[in-house]
Image 1: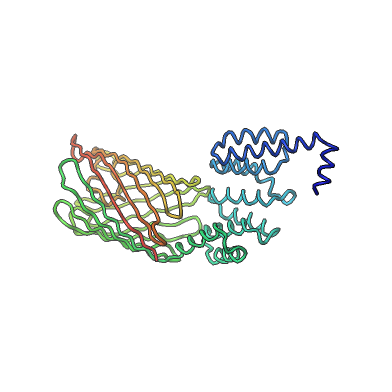
Image 2: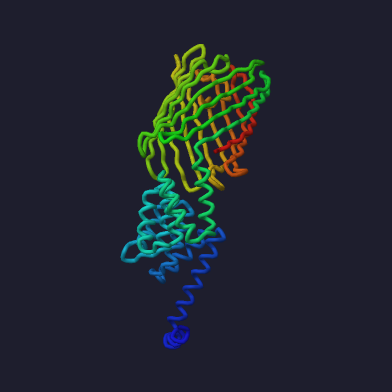
Length: 405
């Protein structure tokens, strides 16, 4: 083919030069994008596409940059025309599948992979993404079969092998978790020690968790025992159910909770529920939350409202997680104002008060240190008003292990 190309270049030197310049410009944009200079890369690509509007490689790279930036609708606008039956492009289909996976639309991702595999049944990129989509849809047997097909075609497929490890971990039906937390106070209290133990069983109906907290506080030792259940109602709804109790004075005699969760699509989830605590008095706390996945980030905002005789006690918490590695590996930051009934490590008898104030910041990290074994760490600081106009700092450090099998 070299001679005809050279001959055409001699006949049309301007066209050959334009093609060469276009390719050079595209490589410049690609280098910028992979070096992290995405805005510059987008500028170069837009200029290139004004000159060569049908340059598909440039369109695909522009779509991917939008997706990397979390601008999924912009990515769809660029990539969707390249996945139509009339102008089908396998790489564009793969890129658009990533958009739907990252934006938590596994059903759309599955449709795209099936559409592409109908044209190229052995396409490894699409087989890999199909396995991920099926796993997100909880269709694990089909996900396993698709992944096995991929690894039969290419036993050394690195992403496929990594996904196989994830499938192995997530197929574990049981989990045992232990967390030790030390709370130190700047005044008024000696240190608290809390050991929490939990066993989780993954059932078809939803996760069932048994949990015990053994704590030493106020020079006394006590235990809180409780159970959680997360029953699935359908693909979009599930419940949180909780019940527990203790004979220790610093734990509630009885506690319970219920929440309804709704998957809104686009990575959004809404919740509404209530918590009940029985100390010397009964306390009912109303709560809600809105959560959002955005790329590798997860955000959650949760308020609590507890009606009192004169005022309503209010608490607000914002949590951010960044998932940096394998499944369940994350860095977390929580900022809060007030008291949370879901924090067993705090003095929940203060919850009914609408006048006492508290502010908190907490850092969490979870890291896989071996197959099916996670290490968790926690650092926290609470600035608490424990009686009118009397404040103290509460420093928290925690370390835990999660073993799955």
